[in-house]
Image (cartoon, rainbow, N blue to C red; front, side, top):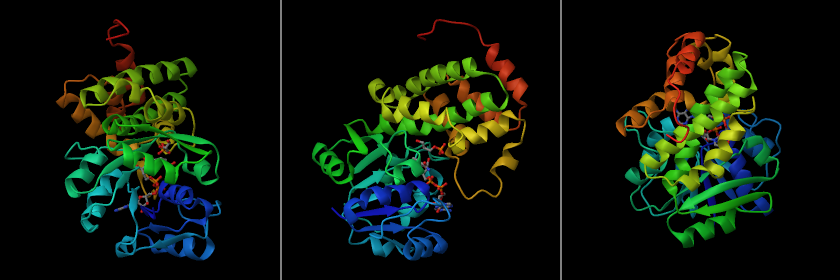
Length: 325
Ligand SMILES: NC(=O)c1ccc[n+]([C@@H]2O[C@H](COP(=O)([O-])OP(=O)(O)OC[C@H]3O[C@@H](n4cnc5c(N)ncnc54)[C@H](O)[C@@H]3O)[C@@H](O)[C@H]2O)c1
Ligand SMILES: O=P(O)(O)OC[C@H](O)CO
């Protein structure tokens, strides 16, 4: 199975490295010419994944037509740009493995839903979990959820991508797998705020637990299964992203917690903090299905410029209630 990767950011590059294990040829599509040149000449993505040597079996291109000989595509374009890129991809029935984490603004669609709309003949899978790109690219041990309704395809993808250091755990719950990844980015911003505002480790643990409760409520309302949300793509990724400044979302939250404006923190960045785009969409999507998401609402308020103290006071003033509700 020849693998193509759509998206030459940190995660697309790390996944190309995974797929190139044993020097199997991989085509990596990137929109930036400097990324293509850097990967092809120096075997490094100096823009998005600097300092990690890449397999020479990875060939980068900025021409989507060069993906025509690939049997399956890993789709790693950030959620808000996915529609534009997938619209340019010729129609076909090659499997699309969605690896971005977000919800599309305007449509409230999850990334696999966007893919199904634009490429109805292509089977979809979702690969998601606690995966800092630089660790994966260096071959450090990692485990992910690989969700696909077609069991034979799921097994084939697991055979092709999995290894001792990149362990795939299969699931048929596509919606559950992608909801965990999208929601945890928003909750990671909240945990960063706790850090930046110096609210302490008790508060961060409380936020992870209550954040997981709202992730589960929303995920189940959108058709995901609780056990998927409690797995690698949900709770696993939530724990990772809520505990490290290696996370762009957590770091954004630290800045917000220190009183900096979102506009200042998001200006001129080349890398994505998906949670900033997902938060307002998630708030609307949750309201649409009647699910309460107070942490998400708080993140939206902070991104809109409400002072940290006001947002924290409002969260702490919420009525106390039964934990299981
Ligand atoms: N970096 C990680 O550790 C990691 C791990 C797992 C999942 N993800 C997810 O993977 C997705 C991609 O993130 P990343 O970390 O690879 O990105 P990145 O921050 O390293 O790079 C930004 C990416 O956005 C792309 N981009 C910017 N403007 C664009 C446009 N107008 N049209 C199309 N593409 C555009 C760039 O080409 C680049 O590929 C995100 O959904 C992210 O949440 C990232
Ligand atoms: O840096 P972040 O916050 O986008 O997180 C990266 C990955 O999603 C962690 O699994």
